[in-house]
Amino acid sequence: MAAEILTLEQLSPRLARFDRVMGLDIGTKTIGLALSDVERRLASPLDTIRRTRFSADAANLLKRAAEFQVAALVVGLPLNMDGSEGPRVQSTRAFVRNLPGGLLVSYWDERLSTAAVTRELIAQDASRARRAEVVDRMAAAYILQGALDRLTRIGAGK
Image 1 (cartoon, rainbow, N blue to C red):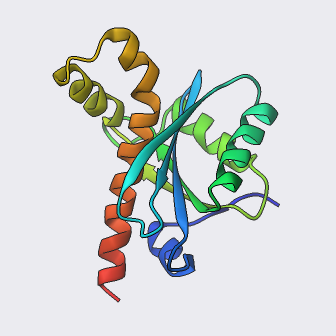
Image 2 (cartoon, helix red, strand yellow; image 1 turned 135 degrees about the vertical axis):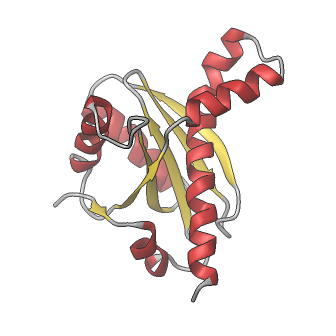
Image 3 (spheres, rainbow, N blue to C red; image 1 turned 45 degrees about the horizontal axis):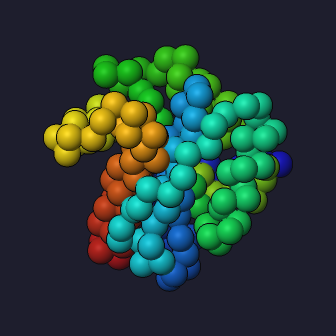
């Protein structure tokens, strides 16, 4: 059984009041992780997983999710600028498809998330080494914050 993929509109009613959500920025070399607070208002950068092979990557991810009692994952979907899906989207979808069942997953359009985070880090005068160290988890937080804001708007419409 694979992870259950839902839109944010479908995910919203399935989340309990204080459920946390984890954001993922899945890259070829790393997976950036971010975590929501229990009220799902604020996304915070959490960690970066260095990718090795799928089973180890998934185990690390699931361990971190269990540690924080995460109810759902929001995965950044790296669409092309014209909205089409390229090889990176296919790779991201394959990663999610291979995750174990019982997980709730929603995708979030992550176009320009890394660029926005990098610009902000440059504006803060972060060194190149520091940017490389934090950009993935910061991008995951950027992705998750967009999804949390959308979940808030969905909840307000109830």
